[in-house]
Image 1 (cartoon, rainbow, N blue to C red):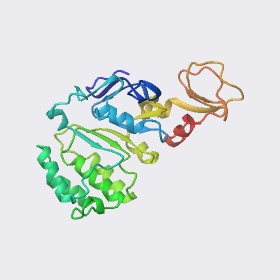
Image 2: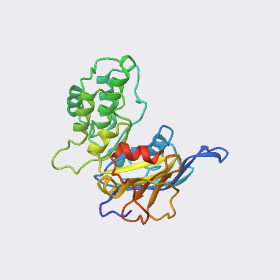
Image 3: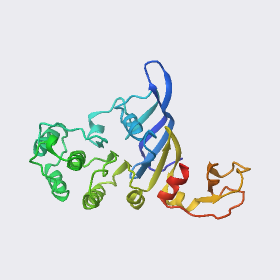
Image 4: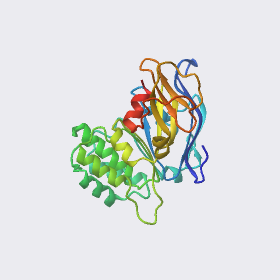
Length: 285
């Protein structure tokens, strides 16, 4: 997939074994290649265990890959300069917090790390999310720990945000306020690039420009969501497809196929367009 815009994320053949010491065992990631242009909002979708969290950590260099490479904002993930780190934000599935510090103390720690950390911005976001910054992190609920992690990740207004299930523990109002903050930037700043995993596909479908479906550590499907939602159909067949041209996925159990309407040359009985929920179900049938 070619892009005219500069790439925020450029991964080439990322692979990771479950047992990296012996070089044996199952692949957690299997030859994942991915190019995300600056300004894209990408939804990362897959079943539990598909490799979503592992992919994010490999992209960031937090878990070095067995083979392949990842570049973030033009720099190798294994050798990120301070200038590039200033432009990155990350929220893991498990918030990375100091349990003995309260929220305000966390803000001061982040301000000491990031030269462009804006405490006032972080305080405004905390207020919108109804987050009590006076409580110790280990005394916060799971949802409030998630809110604090989000506030810390966004306080320096990063150009690239990588978010692993950031809204899983948030109530609907907090999710709405978080989504608004996610795409709010000063007029003189370029649109933020976001890679975000979530099982709340209705929320994702409303905000993403691209979607990446991951299955068993492999890229099953990646592209611009508007294009995929128009191109892909779910059809029901009495027998296995006789042609592979335009076939995206075939479920022998359900006798259903996902096909690209532009390439598919076979019959199209009971053809149906799909939303993201439907496509996720069809690809995992």
